[in-house]
Length: 139
Image 1 (tube, rainbow, N blue to C red):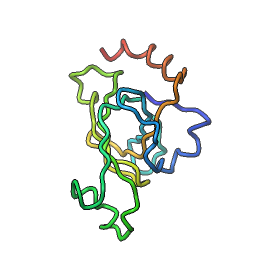
Image 2 (cartoon, helix red, strand yellow):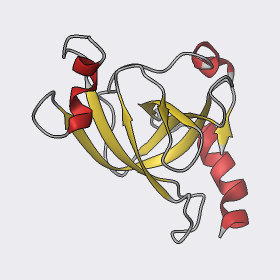
Image 3 (spheres, one colour):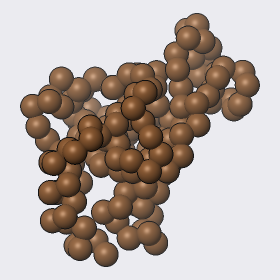
């Protein structure tokens, strides 16, 4: 489910950079996702199941992506496990892992391209109303 509004406009083609300090497990997040590399991003609603910050050289080869690209290791990276409650738990679209934080686009494990992740502000009515309308369609 994609939310299109004026507040999201400046990030249609730019990746949301950083790790939002408001990210909280079990709460709503917005994931930048697009089907084709040259397309604009849309914001997809998900819930944060797990968040793993990565530090260069200490956890995985992916954590040192900045160094491989010739950048200092000051870029913050994290891996988020997201669940999409608008899909059934047995759907391939229900859960995915996303690396984010450094402002880079990445191929999605499911399809398309992902960007950044940001926390959904408390009481975000737009997502609440959209989820209520479509949740029954995918279950």
